[in-house]
Image (cartoon, rainbow, N blue to C red; front, side, top):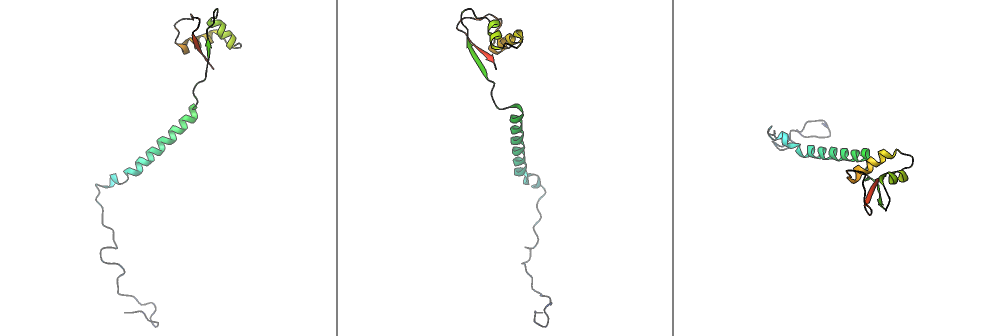
Length: 118
């Protein structure tokens, strides 16, 4: 049956698609878990990057700042700590200086370079 001006809504017996191309073939269920592996890898990389960025913001990205002092004749840890941190407890500051420089005792030598916490 063909379309004419008298029958504008007639049906066309011809097929629009070749046989077998209108339906997608079924896929094997064994390939399904690996099908989205690339997407999951991308999601994991993005999540790792975001968490790394947030941890840098939360913890700070700047290294600790230290001042250095060269020990002069007559200097002691007490004198250095009292001069450098006048409003703080000198004992606490001496302990910080010892830990920062790996000192086992408050004995220091002339010419030694000490790092002081900021």
